[in-house]
Each structure stands twice: as C-alpha cells, then as structure tokens.
Length: 292
Ligand code: R5P
Image (cartoon, rainbow, N blue to C red; front, side):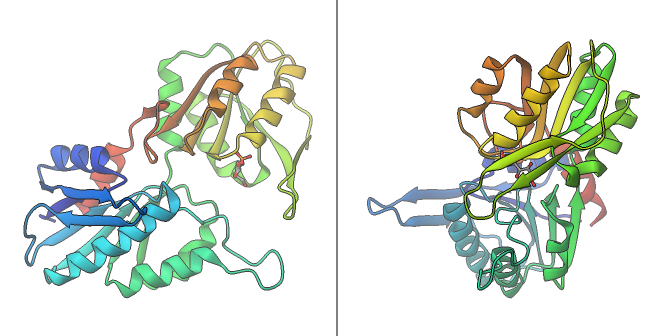
C-alpha cells in the first residue's frame, strides 16, 4: 500500500521512523495548546485522496484522544482513499467491562468514535484485554511486543534466566518470552480493589528462582504498584539479578523506585515515548503496513 504517514501529536517520532523505513511520505502535524489548555492541530500540507496512515498513541490520554478526533475529522475533509490508524497504546482499554453498576465502558465509547470517523483498520499493541476488539466492526490488528522485548534481553545474555509475570492475565506474554529466552516461567496472582485501587500480590504456584536472572514482564506499568510487589517477591525468593520490562510505560519517576529497590534495568517499548523506551516497535508496524 502506498500512502502518507501523518505524525499525530503524540507519536511524531515513531511516525517519522515508520515513514522512513517504508519510504512513505511523512506529513507533519503542527500542534499547540492555547493558554486555556485547548488543543490546536493543523496538517502541514494537503493529503487529498491519499491512503492515510495516522500514527497516534493515546498518551497523554485525554489530550491525545481529543487531538486524535480533530485529526481524523480533518483527514476526512481530504477525501482519503483509506484511513489506517496506528494506535500503539490504547488508553482506557482497562475499562473494557462494567466492574461496578452504572460505570461507563470507556473503551467501547472510544471504539465507537473511531469508527464513526471512517477508520478502516487499526493497528495496536498488547491490549489490556482482547475483548476490546469486539467493540469494533472494522479490522483490528493486535500485535504484541513481547517477542521484541525478549530479544532485547536475549542480546543481554542473561545468566540462568527466568520469566516472571506479575499478573496472572499475562501468561501469553510469558510463553512468548520464555520460549525466546529458552527458560521457565511462572506468574503471580494479583488482586486489585476496584474501589481503593489497592493491589495485593500472592504466589500462585511455587517456583524456584534462587540465583537466577529474573525478567519480570508485564503489559503496562502505570502506578508501578504491581511491578513493585513482584520485585519484592522476586528478591525474597532469592533472584540474583532482577530486570523489569513492559510494553506500555506510563511516564513517571516510578522506574527510579524500581532501580532503588535493586532492579538492574527497567525497559519499555516506544508505544509511549519515555526515557526508558529502549525497544523500538517500528519494524513490527512497518511489516504490518506492508501487508495491509
Ligand atoms: C493489569 O491488569 C496489568 O497487566 C498491569 O499489571 C497493571 O495495569 C499495572 O498497573 P500498575 O502499574 O498501576 O500497578
């Protein structure tokens, strides 16, 4: 597919690197914030009747969402042949069902809006819950960065590696990573209070990590509480070295806390750009765009 890549306000660097790899035309977006906090976007040139790939991750969550809808509406004015949305981080995917009476199902609302703007395909990464895909009537290409993360650690030549998953729901990631690292994996059981947000972590099935290099892998680090609980357990169980990795890292200082708790390295992908984005998802996206 030949087309233009529009660098959304939250993913300009990633969009540029995809465009460079695929040799697509890159269209920049001028954006600014008015003094009262409202967003402004403008395309730097016409994209009349093109195949458009808009790259926009949903972080910072609310601003990037508003800007996404401004951009999609604007792109539609150019009568595009097709719109493909690359949305590496799907914010609000954790609210994919009603946990308490009368809650809004936020990810369903986002899906409806995206579809109403004529998007034909979406490429996204490591959704909190795959059921989010069912909210769409268009094609959702759901990729995982687990393999790229594991390959990053393969290059680091961990000694006697072991993959630990801090949340029972991520076993799929563990399987992929442990296969690449040629090692065993286990997972912890996590409970989160839907009211207070308090997180408790327990060992589900006992495992032996004494003297091992342990990679603790999760889809997302947000407050970091889940990961910090897992680090504590890994230390108590005698891990030799602890490495932490996630796909989506919500930028904060919490990685420093993890380092101060004895973690050797904290790494994330660039689905959300941050100072710890060491694993580049550009090749995965480019490969998919070549097929679409
Ligand atoms: C949860 O279900 C996810 O897989 C993550 O473990 C979780 O969302 C991380 O959140 P936090 O960093 O706030 O503990």
